[in-house]
Amino acid sequence: QVQLVESGGGLVQPGGSLKLSCAASGSIFNINTMGWYRQAPGKERELVATITNGGSTNYADFVKGRFTISRDNAKNLVYLEMNSLKPEDTAVYYCNLQYRTVVGRYENYWGQGTQVTVSS
Image (cartoon, rainbow, N blue to C red; front, side, top):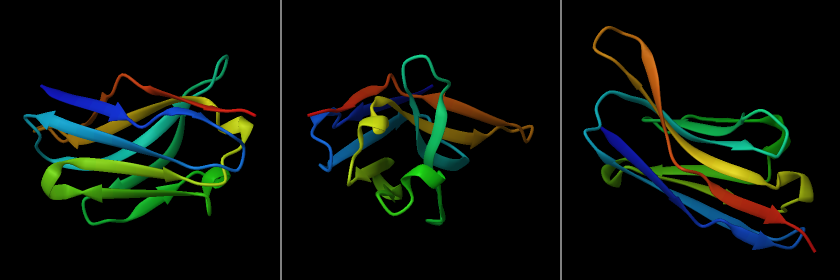
């Protein structure tokens, strides 16, 4: 079993910055990607950014140029540095770990989520 624990959320003013961290622990094998998703009230969960073992990144258009994802493979940590935050970035942010099973399927683990609120 794998556990993902997020930290770093909070309240920030528009234009401000936050850095989220996620620590993965447990029996971790065949990781495909780690990443961040978010869910705002009344909306579906959406991808924010992902990063592969090799460091290739993928960002949602609405965060390009503002957010940066990074990863420490040795420590199974993934980070999301968020700059120029906007009120519409307010959401619960979830850490995600996608892995490949022995039969070749992709499955996901999720953290419990951390609240990010952007408000003056």
